[in-house]
Image 1 (cartoon, helix red, strand yellow):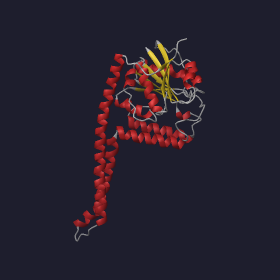
Image 2 (cartoon, one colour):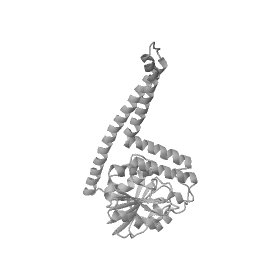
Image 3 (cartoon, rainbow, N blue to C red):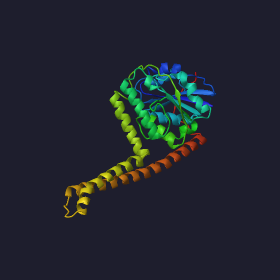
Image 4 (cartoon, rainbow, N blue to C red):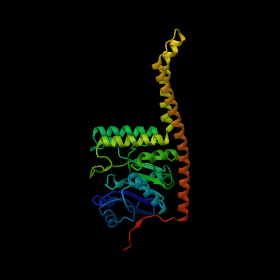
Length: 325
């Protein structure tokens, strides 16, 4: 059994050594433990620092491609290197590495395919009251939307078994946390939550410069994913609401015509006609988007088969490897 711990990095030369120092080289249930970092176009000496600190493999981008792309590239490389379980963590040592054995335990016991580290954001002192409330609200939204019982939707401390990792195909380039949860549900994978400790932050977040930027970016991410994965749930209610508005707009004209002499009610007729045509268009958009989603589902299954073939024939990953002493 091989465990791979992957870390997406962008100019993390200062903080990466402390993160790697805390990572285990032995975990119960695994014969081998490897470390892999994804260098997302760093302009400092992150790669050299990583190798000096004992990292086994590096996936390197020539320019910054975003957190989700880095995460996906790391997963692909780990699979090709023979990973049975993959753990993702952050380079700034935000997550307490002592929780790794507990994080992988549900997978080893056969109770879960994906495990998310729950930071208990309500108790994180450095989070403002507003951010704690937003984290809780966002997690509730993701629970209802994705259909999975996640308790910390934006936690990046996660473990995936081999089968689950093979079914992750991200579209977003910004963040993988929410979209991967949707795919957990789509693939009928079992998810578990494990309490983890959160270390004090050593630097401000590079994804979010402020709470409002955090809200705006995550809100847009959820809307975009909703459009991609649940189009009928968005377009059909909106179309029906517009249809109801159309009927309400037509009512003065209808009622007046039932009690002659009738008046034209031109404004009501125009508004009703516009709302009616708009409602039909919106519902048609939903049907078209749902058809595209069906094609995407087939594409995801095809990509999983392609990955399986690549692993069987032994396609080499594009990684830099630690030189033997």
